[in-house]
Image 1 (cartoon, rainbow, N blue to C red):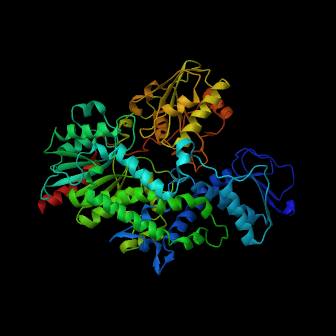
Image 2: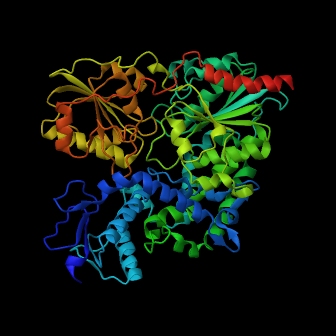
Length: 636
């Protein structure tokens, strides 16, 4: 192989002293002159590759299996396909760590072709990457060589028990998930199935499905459910002339255990039973529904065994680079493992909810375009066809996220192949509508509403703006919900502290994401500085902060910027840049201890528009949306 006509691909911490037509770094952002950084090029090309990726996901769903499209082949209800519950269709960059390597492979392929390379030398030992590159070069008829003193090994972001667990057969992983689900949740529910507390069908009542807990615990003690996701909408619901059903989707949280959630549900249900009823989603999984889930799991398992040919389609149009080895876990777990059983349980639970819990005239849920939401929308359309379905976009839409967006051809499909769309997508910011329209989301389905969880920002633009102290500062560390990202963020801070990065700070306060406590990671990392871990809502912590240090994925960075707090944001942890401020020219993402030290020493504010969110205190937009349908229902 002639090195001067080849691409040299350098993996992490690998050096190359020879020649090469193109020398590219697979992981490094810092590189020598004349070399290329694949991650940097992904950052530059992310939006164009996103469109290619969305088109590929659409095409994969149309792949023919036994004379049917893959979507139709995986039908589990009259109007719903299991395809939408797979990791591939969900396309979550945080949940599916394989997406980012696929973006990098696309960049690598373009770089290889544009420079007319005639061979590839991979300096590294990542097993799946080696397999993909070797097979690609064979298809091209180009020479390939791996150069490394180490044997190939799979690279996983999971370690300890989690990494060990993934080595088990997928069937065992699925059964272990069920056992864990029973131990953590089901055993605390004395009676599952249709609840006797549900009001009769003829009564006007609406249903809201929400993440849980992240609640006001003080109000909860007196039997008043108040979610920080929904804020002052609770007061609007008080005034509506209808009964209100809340369905809680519990996530593991330091705020409240599942067992305590059951007790809280009972307390809330006894407070205003004629107005409010509260349910944990798992209540609707009767024994009959549970066995239906097992039957569906076995159906999907058996159909998954027939999909071996589909792996040939894991390449972009006109490309010979097949990236299936990168996505193998996501694919197999979706049909055989934990994700398969989790998906069918979710679908059956929401089917039962839609059968038994009226949503008249409307139902609302937190929108992130996740698989469970699609199960819910499809179930409401099956069993309550007159229900208006409102999806509330409760957080931030990220330009490099894939979940909110679809290939435009998806919206043209019908029958079982139709994507489960809500009747209205309620957007909390004027900035999101152009972004959704860019990807051809139906304009008539978009409606503006007030940003409920950010309502506390009303009248607070740059409220916390103050002179930066020369010493005695307070650093507020806002973490995300991804373990790998959180480990990187906290490890970076501890390394910066060892080179005096915190010398101007007297206090560090950690604010964990509600779904991911940081105590375990902090115990393992053993920080040398004084710190506290806060449990109160983020809005109560901004006033004590001189500087905010935020995870890449957290929307807390937007709140800090809006309030005028100097802001430091971690760069993506081997992933797409999922920060809401990505694209603002004034932001510099930190990726190493030295860079973090510089920012800690001289932090900067980020200027964002004052009207970033819809923040009318009277919730006029919400009132117009919710009361309109209630008025129609009452007239009928």
